[in-house]
Image (tube, rainbow, N blue to C red; front, side, top):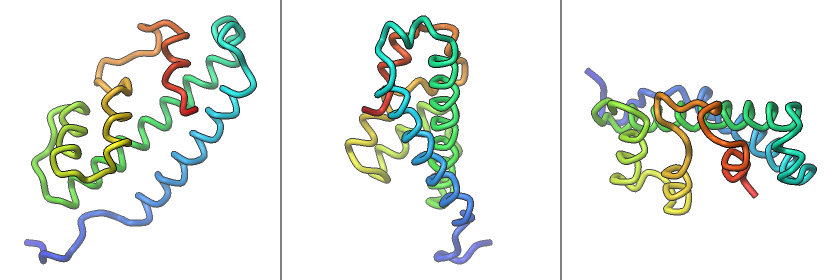
Length: 126
């Protein structure tokens, strides 16, 4: 099997995903700062880009979270909600991040088409 100190995680992949999260959050902040709620709701170029960067950031967070769970040799989570609950139970990320992750739209059936744009804008990192 694996040695106790042998990692199952490719550090390069995790570092790349963390870099992408920083990039997407910076772009979301820029969109948030340049558009009011009215423009966000009405302009498909604004809300479309924001929704896409939010989706990409969420996917990167999920990827990194799954790497952490694998590296800790925890059971495979059944869904994304359980993934974040596992991280919270093991205190594998800071409290503020755990709270923020719990409010993110991460269920397997989540679709940006199913919620209002003003709610999507509320997920922006301010």
